[in-house]
Image 1 (cartoon, rainbow over the protein chains, first blue to last red):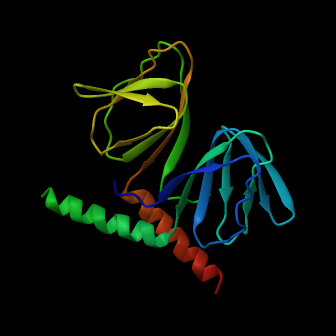
Image 2: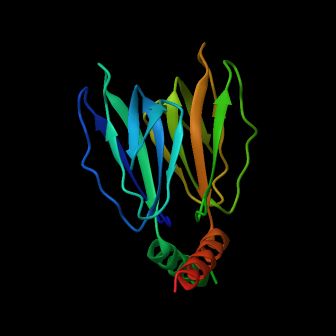
Length: 98
Length: 98
C-alpha cells in the first residue's frame, strides 16, 4: 500500500496513561471500542468508540483509559513529506502504465 | 482539518448490499462493528470489526451485510490531487509562520 499517511492500531488497557507528546504531523484518532479521555493542555475530552479526534500539529496530548475495559483506537498521522513521497510514487505508477 | 485523504463513516443495515463501483482513488476500510463481506471480482472476503481492507485503484468492489446486525466501517480514500492540495496548504501554513 502506498499512502500519504501512516496508521496504527493502539490499545490502552484499563488504567493505562499514554506518554504526553507533541509532533509536527497532523493526526486523527478513530475510536474503535471502549472509551477514554484525550488530554490536551488543561482540557480533558471524552473519547468513545465511534468518535473521531483531530489533533493539530504540535498540540501536546495524551490518552487516559480510566475505565475497566480495553480502549482500542486507530491512529492516522500525516505530514508534507508523506504526500511528497506519495506523489512521486503516483508519477512513477502513471509512467509505468504508459 | 487539512488532509491528503477524505473519510466517511458508513453503515450497512442487515441485508444491505452496496452498489458495485470502481474508482481511481486508493482506499481503505476500517471495520468498526459487526461483520460483512467485501466482494472484488470473483472473490468474497470476510470483513469483521477490527479488520482493515485495502483496495487498489480501479478494483471493482462492493459490500454485503449478510448478518442480522448493522455493519459500520470507516472509509478513507486518497489520490494524487489530494496530496498536491495538502502540500500547497502546508507551504502556505509554513509561510504564514515566517
